[in-house]
Image 1 (cartoon, rainbow, N blue to C red):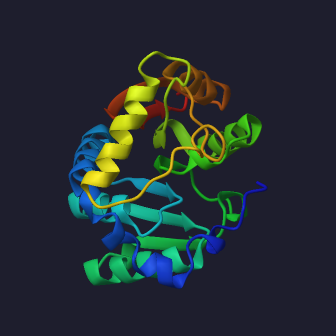
Image 2: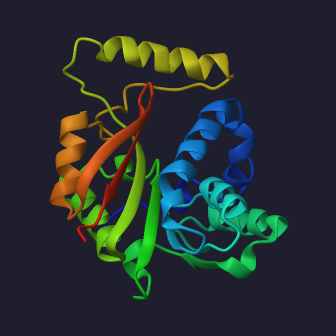
Length: 228
């Protein structure tokens, strides 16, 4: 995929301070991880999970703690973020259950199909629909029949009457937790799709039964599956 080099945005210094910078969003992340564990728990005590764009490893650590026999393949293209992820995994004592791949998903060697995959706040940076569809299709192709994909992205219907109010609340949230945010990048540098558009994108990518199960302002989380 022809994406911008994330190392330009997440160098070693920015990656090292990433978790502290976003600490004020912990209640949202905790809710996200609680529901993520619930949605994936039917996989059973043993599962292979692909974490795409894993960043500093937040969902990896949450899942590894909840499911001590699961194994993980961690994909992250930014060296600084991967370094922090490895450090956190080592501190948690889970590196023996992890395979780390520094790069994009399309450079990951083929392997036994995964039982599930996560893509948390990643795909909305692909503003071109075809590139975004290929991204999800690459994930779907690496899942077994019946395998699950959980993706969380910024999303909204920009034509809806409530859109401007949602954005106002989004800005207020950032201000409350001590973060500055801009809004002029929404829909331009960050692709915002309506629920219907996201559902169709996931279907067009080879996934079935896309279900929206979590929303906090502009953050929306879906679970889909590969046809059995």
